[in-house]
Amino acid sequence: MRIETTKAVVSGAASGLGLATATMLRHNGAQVTILDRDPNGSVVAASIGAHFVQTDVTDESSTAAAIGAAVGKMGGLTVAVNCAGIATGAKTVGREGPHSLQEFQRTIDINLIGTFNVSRLAAAEMAKNDPDEGGERGVIINTASIAAFDGQKGQAAYAASKAGIAGMTLPMARDLANLNVRVMAIAPGIFMTPMLESLGEEIQSGLAASVTCPKRLGDPAEYADLAKFIIQCGYLNGETIRIDGALRMQ
Image 1 (cartoon, rainbow, N blue to C red):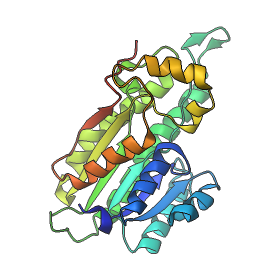
Image 2: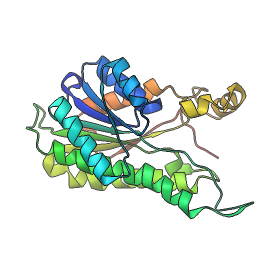
Image 3: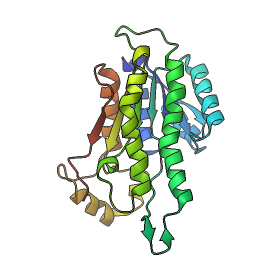
Image 4: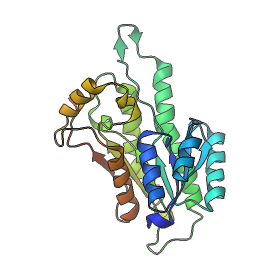
């Protein structure tokens, strides 16, 4: 699939990995609609020449309306990149007692159910497309995490949500094969997102030291570059790709 003819929705693109991906797509000539709960997404979208629809990915009607609006603005939909998510930390049993069930549910709702919600609705729109020169109708890229495979203590909710994303990649790809829609997932390691920027240089340096090579935090632009490659490489399907500098969390 060619980037310059892409019509993409990117969830969670008001900042971080999603913003880097939306920016990459726009710089390469794609049409982009940002889906985000943060109303500041409208400012971000305007700055890169994208559309914006305020969206709660956990809400069926909100997301359906957002996908419909995106299709109306762009005249179709060929790519969906899901970056909306939260990072939570709590032990199964901590000093204050057992893990909050409400917080566990919230993490699953946003990270996993929200991702599936956007994916299923985007796929339904992609099914309406005429196949391109490579026979494709669309590409879906979801964001897992290396925590899906080697989560640390305090990451039960987060790791479960990201493992769910990795786990649904292959069956979803198989489900959508007859529609010629590919499904991939990216599992980032430790990236320099706004959340990490707020932790200060000392903590950032400690995290960077744990990376095998190169000993630094990931640049969101590197996530975007991988997303670009996935879109363009038609033989990539049903796989989760780690991008983590060979980091294996202790």
